[in-house]
Image (cartoon, rainbow, N blue to C red; front, top):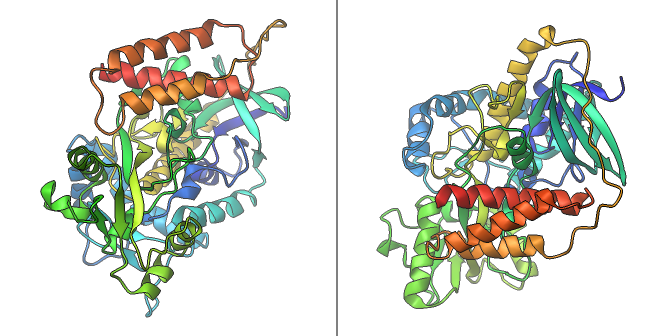
Length: 483
């Protein structure tokens, strides 16, 4: 019985943790965390969480409209309405858990502005909102006696059974099979399929790959958001994000001549949505024949900048830049995924009793481009939707558990090096901000070749193999969609 659970949740970001919190206390939950609990994309979210909460100057209709505009009116109206109408509930819930949002001098919650929003509706904790929310969610989950947490545990296999699901978990070099009646995939994004990303090192699209292999529908995986203002240090794969909120507080975008240029591309200037700004930077780089771009907030009061963006201030200072005195070098970088595992309004995939929430899912709320600070909100709203739906089904689940087999080959070989590097290079060169239509067919052919080799080769199933296979699968689906 120790390996059998009502629900297995893969992923310990905001969606995974909040899903566990919202399941009934009688529900036995296994929470599988690939690395340590604090390592996830949710913890890196700087700007905040958007929502209409006790806001007399704002409305759900305005929030929906801004989200639709940013998404090119390709959003799913039904799931978008769920997102915006549930925002107040989730914001109140995390406040009740002790989340410490910034406040005005009179004690009211402070709301900031970000690109694409027509109202100040972003609740934030300085410039480290994701880390603050994650901290309080972790504290809450650790108090729940019905939740078992496995850290440094990697899901290396997943199969549908007659009674639910079996997963093969690698932990400390040993493998254990766990079974459940329900499964929630909350495995985050795909950033590591690119050479440069703002995502954490664990963002390799594992949940999406496992869902695809099990026959779940994957939709719009090519809808990838490139954040326009990542710190331009291409010495590391993880690029430090300069939050949207910096432009929201009045920062200017400058080209290589230290001139503002957004007026040539969009009337909203620096407050245009992310896809517009990223595309504008690429077009301007072609015009100026330079990749040197900057974000400048040095015209604002230095004390305000240091207090409003303490983490960003310290991070760029470590790199030799004082943002209160000089422009910061920036360039677009892979940031977020709008597509993913297709789900309904209850976050259920096309496979019964398999759910997905957070960045790995495709709810359709973002349309073609995510509006700033809607991601943390989506993670909370739709993981709770999954938890509520699972709770309704729990009384009718079978009392038994089937266990799937995960056979190993005695003569399996260690995966050769270089697959992941080649995949990232192909994606960076073929499908970055403005796709290279001439190169795409050849890029897809090579990705397909790599994936077939990984699927059909006799390789040892370890972290290297699973992540390479996940990245190859993700890249394969993306390029197949755009060809």
